Length: 209
Ligand code: 3PG
Image (cartoon, rainbow, N blue to C red):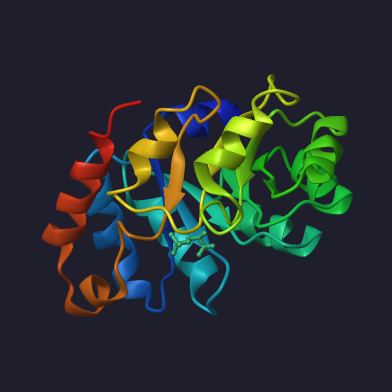
């Protein structure tokens, strides 16, 4: 798979964190995001339908690049690849998850929240990391502090990020993009309000970096 973590982070200012409970929602939702300018789609492995949703998007939605979120084990990584995922995002980092992703050719954004976790991910070759949970664990001030010792790392802060506070993060030199669930509200999915999801994606894709 020729897709690097940096390419995943640089494609748009926001990576949507998506929770899907109904396979029928997957394709129209993904089409709405792509129409709004968001192509890198993180479908979280939090529901029984997640893998089937990833497969439907991978097979049917032109322009979308499906990734798996909430990857917590080597088994998750294997299942995600089989379902068509081209990148993985994890809420934390373990050597086993990193190894499994490398074995499968899956680019990984490892989740970190402390200096030790950053160092462990860097030891395994990762320089693009997800900061999770970003706003809860220190937000922009934490990223500014990390820019000293970890000057060679780029972050994707995720957790508590909104259209309103995204600029505070995206304006930092060590932030490549942010992640967040606000682009795909559960009520918009339930109502089949694809126009609203497209509008949220368009607004997010126009955030300055
Ligand atoms: C998550 O894991 O749910 C993501 O961090 C999204 O968090 P958010 O709902 O605060 O955007």
